Structure formats: C-alpha cells, structure tokens
Length: 588
Image (spheres, rainbow, N blue to C red):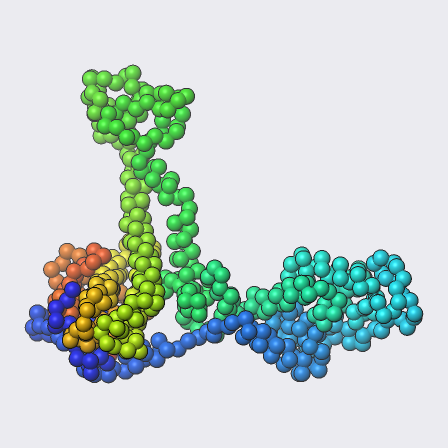
C-alpha cells in the first residue's frame, strides 16, 4: 500500500476534492518531477459536483404510497369532474392514470369520452316488478336478488359472480369490464365488484388495479429486482436514468437493465446479446477448427500429427494443413508434421481467403475475450464487495467499535468507502463494454480512454486495498491503536478522491470523448512516444507532472511543453493557441 505520505490531516479533508482524481492536477510545471500536495481550497466545480450528486430525480414508492397516490388521483378527478369515484377510476384506467389527459379529453368532448369509456350520463333503473328474469340463466328471481350496471340490464347474483370471477381469472382485462349483455358497452366499476363477488376475487381485482397504476403509467415502473415490491416514480426529462431502489438494487430507468453508466442503453443491449448469443461459439469453431473435406463436420486438432481421421461414420483420412487425402501423403510431402504441398499452395495464394477468415475470427475472438474477462472479473469483484459490505454492516463494524473504542456513529466512513467501491466496480465493469465498441480507427480517443480507464482502475485498487487489507489490522488489534485516526483520514480521503474521479470519468465517457482528436495536438499522443500527454500520481499518492503506468495497458503521458497546455480541471491536452479547454470548456 502507499506510504505514510498518503496520510492527511483531518482538517484538510475538503481539499481532497481538488487533487488529481477530480481533475485538479497541477500540470505544466517547470520541474517535471516535482510532487504536488493536495491544494487546500474550495473550487466551484467541487460544489457543483456535490450539488449534482445530491439531486435525486425519482421517488421510491412502497405499496402504501402507491395506494395513497392512486386514491389522491381518483379523488382529484372525481371532484373536478363531479362524478363518482368509481367512474373516476374507470376514466383514469382508460387514459393510463394521466389526470391531465382525463381533464383534457373530458372538457374537449365529454359526450365522446362517456361513449368510449362506457359511462352513461343518465343511469337506467331496473323495472319496478316483484320478479325479474335473469338475462343469462333466464330464471325468475325477486327484484332484490337482481343487480344491474348503469345500463339497467339486470342479472341474478349467481350469474354476476360467475361472470366477474371468470373475467378476473382471465387477468388484468377485468379492469375494463363491461355489461354482460352483448349489445351493451356500459362499464362495470369496482363498486359493483366489491358488492357482488367473493373476498378472494375482490383481493385479486384490487391487486390488478394497483399494478395497473404502475404498469400503465409512463412515469412509474416496478423495481426489476427479483422479489422487490417497490415502485419508482421518475421525473421525466432528467438526463440521468440511474435509480437506486430501497432494496439496494441499482437499475436504469430507461431500459430496466442493471445500472450501466457511462454506457448507453443500446450498447448494453448489444453487449448482453453478444454475451448470450451463439456468435462467439461460431467464431471459436471458425478460429480453432477446420471442416472435414468429405462430410464438412468441423474438427478440432488435438494431436501433434497432421494425419487426421474424421469420426464415424465418415472416417475420412486427410491432411490437416492442405485438407488433401492422406493416401496421397507421406515422406515425399514432408512427413507427418509438415506438408510441402500446403506450403507451395500457400505461396501461390491458394489458401489466402480461408486463412484470412480464420485469422480474422481468431483476432475477433481474442479481442472479445480480453474485454469480456475484465468485464466479468469486475462483476465478480463487485459481488464480493457487496458481501464484504454486508459483513461489515452486520458484524465487523460492531467488533471494530469495541476494539478501537470508537462509537459506531463515527465509523460510517468505512461503510461509505465500501459503498463507493461497489459503485466504482460497476462503473469500471461497464467501461470494458464501452471500450469494446469504441471504433478502432479513432486512435487518439482510444488512447485517452485507456489512460482514463487505467487511472480509474489504479485508484480504485488503492481504495479497495485500504478498505479491505489495511482495515483488517485494526480489526485484529487487541487494544486501541494510536494511528486509527490517521487511517480514518486516509480512507476518507481515498473515498472522496476516487468518487470525484469516477464522476468525472462517467461524464467524459457519456459525452463520447467527442473533443478528443479534434485538434492537431492529439497527433503528439502515441503509445510509443517518450513525450507523454497526461500527468499521473506518484507511489506516495502525491501528484506528479510525469506519467504513470496504466493497469489496463493504457499508455502513460506527459505534456509537450512547446505545443500544449494541460487543463487544470480535466487534464486534457490543449493547443497553446486556445485559452479555453476543448474538453470541459474550463478557462486557462
């Protein structure tokens, strides 16, 4: 882990937002090897980041909240339109629970709305007779045993119960229930259902109505986590679709997949499809096998000899290299481990196309495997971090409180660190999907992306190691340790700077790194160049103007003093002819 130089005074915690990970890197110094401590000042950008982080554009709704919102909407429509609550519920259900849509349509053409929805303006009373005939079973019953909707078509209680029960059993379509008379379209509301049907059916109908309020409303969705009963009300028009449910599951409002910033929803869909599709299996077959010349079955070579025998019933014997019949081979063609015929044909170009296709498939497979393995590794690390977070919350925090004589309220910085690790693992995971679909020909953009990704991974590893391994020393201690406050300062500082760096990384990737490569300055960025384009961090945790190695294989960079200046805000290398950063528009 880092040296004691990483330890900062607790009073300087606010200044940590301004170091390298938040983009406030001291660059362009005359002394290229100089170290820079964290600057103790409050930048406007740090305040903007904090404000942005605290904004929440959604509300988590429990079942009780959903019912309350539903009742409020029904009451509002009922009062404004002077209709019954049952009629208001039917109207809202028809217009997908949009109060404004109901009002607009109703006041524009009330008569047409009533006709479409099935609300009669003047209800029809049942005939005033001692006995009435049921329109379904045609039995005569006393008038008290008959019921009718607003249309006046009367049916006996048994037939109503059977009709309603069948409709409820068929699913949510029961919410648009109409009169049983085939020629009638009068709506049957919840008030009649509560009177005529069984308790079991009433509960089912109520459940369908509750789910309809969420599923038919464009502003609300259920949390997609298995077994979660919370819903989310979203403020439309917000740029950030990430939602964190009360069940701790994070998902994207737009596509309901796992939260995936900085990758957009279409890229996530392509990546998930690629991971589950058979395309990579076919690529593997193409890259590692050849078809039998006789039956065309793909064969993988698992022995050193070039003499291949196809499986029964084919049993065709052929040469692995030239795919010719083995009966025509022997010492005269190069023996069992070579084929002069193949080498000669290859020089003549006979195998160029098949070899080219096989090589392309192999390269494609290797590239996909590179990104998928790292995507999956970060996913595994995130799951492990979630388990460690749960363990810390349930048992280890209390143990640490006893060992270090600290109240649990003063140990929240450890939980915050683990929460940040979990979030950063998620972001880092999706940067590999981002990198996979980054166009190969955009070299400057790819180099800059690999640099940012490498620095993110390096910073996260420092935080993760501090929260996991260094904390264990204090958990194992038998007596309180004097340097625990130093550890607190260090872990809180690493959490803060890592959070700021990842937030800046997400914003940069969401804009597509669109300004990278837009100027001639990017021509100086090269993986093999000894002149670096971006600064890094020393092993002790202080800022260096020189480069640093990237854990993901990205290049190290520093500034070409004659042509470029580094933005103090985002470290982007700009031409000296400009006074405004082309990446973040920060003034020089």
